[in-house]
Length: 559
Ligand code: SAH
Image (tube, rainbow, N blue to C red; front, side, top):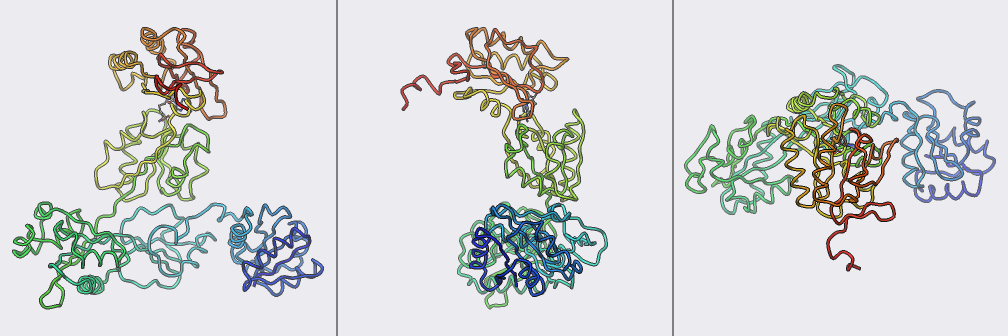
């Protein structure tokens, strides 16, 4: 029971909303506040006090006896802004209660327990089927008790504070096992069931065969990732329905692809019917893996279904994540989620610093200095190939003059790759300058470190001739100072001296600066490697101090 205590009219109104939402869980304590708190403390497992924390501290202090015995106490302030978990955060459930109250009343939960603030992923939020003592093992993780990870298959888990031994266990397995005491069993989607069926094979026969085969092999149907078959059977109702009932996709391969797979039990019948000597085994094996159950026929007579089971190799996950130009609110929620999803983070030290506070405890950070690009790319891919969840980070967009291409040039198709776009410098600068990119535009890097200057110059000329708005990345560094003047000179051959030029330094960072000048007035000495330079086209104007490139010749006619 949750005891509710309030003193003021505002408190009573919030209290009544809780009482109305949880009629069976709550009990309102009226009367003098001191008596009410003491009575509720003695009679309830939890208290929500619509009182100042100071008042509650004074009232409950003499009543406290110990972590395991005390009720959980949550305080909600008079303004209804915060729900403070005051006492009994874990054992008393006050942290959870503060969150629940927050959802109902719109109050911000205030949780100060170290492990909760450290923000561990919930075992039931990993996207994997889970069985066993989820509450017990989660609490052990939160309380910093030793929790061992027993991974029987490779799977890219998020960071978890696990140890080699422990009285609690997280078991990652596709085997048909019951969770032991103090154990959670996580089911990775590691099994592929290859299926074949004669025309009109009933779903009961297909599903019955799959279930029998899995059970007899000691495998869990919760780990089935997909059913696989040959193209010609992709629409076979028994297979389609079996996949639907298992909640997995039915994936189909061409007969040619399947015929090329080496299988232990080829036969003539499917060769004649669909053009491959094996359907079930070949479809299960076509993406690689270990054949756990060779082809089996259903027991029906005549048998209309076959199946085979493969454990596919664990696939690591490489997320290539753009962090945006700098400001935290220009980091996308998806990027944030990927950073917290990864157990290994690879990046340039200064970018790691930008997001270090977002990482979950246990995240392995592999940071390196400027220049070590190839090595970072290789490291990220190697870690992913070990089956881990890796995030490779870059500022702006990680695909723009950044890590995505060197990494993907290294990557083989045995890992999953997820790209998360970020706000690249040209866009961040554009938004600050006004609307310079309103018509066709290009980005050109002036760094001749990886690209010969002749190539860069040819592209600048082409952009000049094509009247494209140009954003220069890497415009000027200490050792590279003549390239920007040269590039501006080329553009000036095709554009008026008064063409607006935007110079943005440290876009969206604390020391951001920006100005709009012109092709001839720009002083290259004011430009450095923290800067992008955007040169307008022949139609770009400075309007009220902002740089505006019309969308087209007819832009003024638009409403
Ligand atoms: N991947 C990055 C670009 C890396 S190249 C992106 O998408 O933005 C590095 C160059 O980008 C710098 O020399 C500078 O020209 C530009 N740059 C990156 N961040 C910037 C920022 N916040 N403000 C201005 N220019 C920036």
